Image (cartoon, rainbow, N blue to C red; front, side):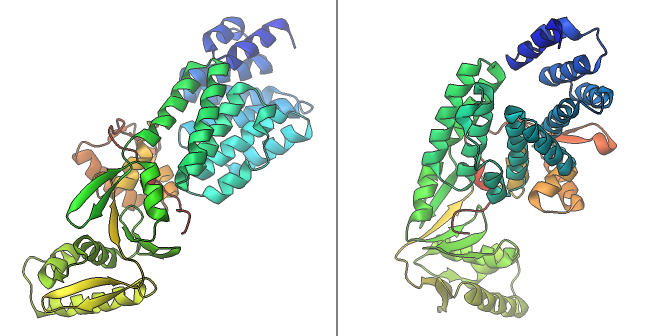
Length: 406
């Protein structure tokens, strides 16, 4: 490898894309094309970077399997940044195996880190943890250590384990400062702010209390009966019942939970669960049916008792009932939580991450555009969705993932 290629590679490793381009901008050999592609990616011209990396992969000879694998890993990182979650994962797995087989442990670890980040975006927390489980971060350069620690912190945050998340973020900050790459330092600082901003609201009776993530962790670990409006579940001491696909039942459970220990009049339940303005016998009959279904769904943790004016929630064992609500009431909060990372998402990527159909996501996005909460750009398959960061609270509880006892 000639001195200019070596110098350009060193500049890229230090986060200096202009220094790299000064050395290889006019060259079209395979190594120069690969370095130019990485430099353009660091500068934000991701489409040009993708083209250059594909040209480089084709230009490398059949005996340069490691170089081709590195191009694949770089292209996978671009796909992740552009939220192209449909990018072929098997190509990344093959590249990672090639790099590991030829002793390039740093780039092989980077490939595993990218795979873990993709899994984390789609809510597959256990798979993400397995992807990086046996990596010894002390063996890698500072930039790689910071990236891996960010994934570790992300996994801990999705599981509401704030202490290991905080420790991982501290290690990530140390590694990012050692690497001296401003963008990496900024990414770690942004991730760290999640622990210091409001994550949810605790509703107990007629009072509401803002909670940090560590406060939410304490609530989930308590013996209280929790009506979790962030995940649409009801949980208590290890038992959890998901009502995510039964919105009427969850609306009834939340209304009963917010009123506990008092009962709730039937007309209030009908208004909250069905949106009924004018109540007749058919509404009352449907309410009795849905209350019966809710009794069956919650029989492990609570009962629903009838009163003269309505119904009341009666916990089986818990001495306290609380509602864990979103920081703000927003119908499409999960979409906003994903867009809050500052990246541009396609409709297909949002659908894949949330497990919904693209048509459902399109209708929701159109509504958010009308409300001025998201902004589209591009057309056709190139259409992407962005939003400005939401200040004042963290969206960690709204992202696709399972809590520890789910």
